Every structure is written in C-alpha cells, then in structure tokens.
Amino acid sequence: MHDQQPASTLIESFVVTPEKLDLLLKALGYEGAPPDFKGVAAWVGYKVHREDVWKRVKSGELCAFSIEGTAEREEVA
Image (cartoon, rainbow, N blue to C red):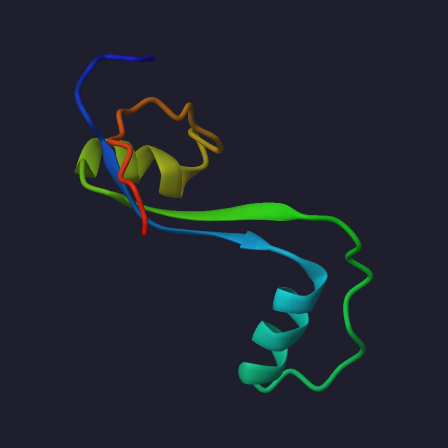
C-alpha cells in the first residue's frame, strides 16, 4: 500500500506518562478516578491530506497505517 504519494503529515506527538495523563485529564475537567495506566506511551496526531485516503479511514476500510517518512535531526541547546 506504499504508493509513494504522501497522504498525511505528523502534526503533534508527545510521550504519555502516568503523571502527564493525570495532569491532562485534570486540565480537561475530568473528575473521575485516575486511569490505571502505569506505563509509558507515545501519542501521535496526523492530518490526512488525501480525500481518497480519508474516505477509506472514515469507512473503516483503513483502521491502521504504516509510518513511512523522513526527518531531519536538529541539535537542541
């Protein structure tokens, strides 16, 4: 399914820890018991640009995708 036509762009990502999840839920006004999450995970958000691909996502035909891309390393002071 890698047709070499970019379909999406990564727009956001962050590492989720139990502490971050607790703070996020509190900031969103969640007042229930904290989730029983003990691990570490990564959350990513993508913008799908191709209408043909987005239609397949919305229909349920595509329920997952392969991450293929490039990146540039940037030194942080």
